Length: 396
Image (cartoon, rainbow, N blue to C red; front, side):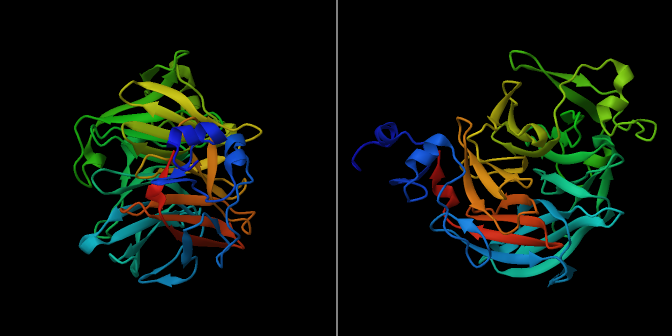
């Protein structure tokens, strides 16, 4: 049986096609073929480890930060949310994490690692902001931190801690969630976390190469309209700074409701991530993950929850080096799940003891074999984890 090709083996057992590269066994190395086919939530992840995480065989975890505890120069924040990693000098890297605290007590913290993965410093890169939810990394090595508030803005932050944060008014004032940037054009795609969300993009007049340029660059602000054949029309938004105080809704497009703009409404558009000329974004209230194909200018649903799906309430997103979309649950089963190309979900990890929390900020280190994320509010604290293992060997 093990001499069969991978395609023949898949056909014979009817799995969803999740493999460790070079090994003709399901990635879980356990009896999961029937469960993979049914897309059930009962995957046999290993028993919880000392940190409470249920992981795949061959993976391990550690807690790298807890709110209130000092890391280098910085006391780690509460309400840890969106995150990303950046290469640093001497082969190390930096993980940045938003704080979703309100009342202008939000911001962004950073943890610096050396080439061996040891923590060598911690510091703050954004402060005195409001409900910093998710965000997006840029090709010019900055972090766009998004405020989830009706009067929220996007802030450009320096992950290396050398430059002060910059407010980017051209990206609009609304209930921001996440951002994703096309490295070829510097076009910035944005989600909005309301029940009547638009999906937006900002087209700068010129390509951006370094921190500070974006705030001084004019451009067009547009909203997405999806046609019946999945093709997309982008319509101009007259006022991305429309006054929310005279409106009964937080939605930017409803503030522009008298402008006769045709657009598609989403239910709580949240996580967003760029990978290989595609923008992936989640809509939490409708339990969906969408793919906007930049080259084809089309937008389709990649994943939609059904009765057999284990992924609920998809929120923050990331994509592995080999192209697997991964979604953190806003509550649900407290899982981070992968999505197959056919739109089926499978659990990467689960944190069952943090039932009233939510998982946030998934992001890989430059090697792709360390995954960072947080449990936002377990017992009034945020816990930030690192899970290491052969993520690059997972293929779908």
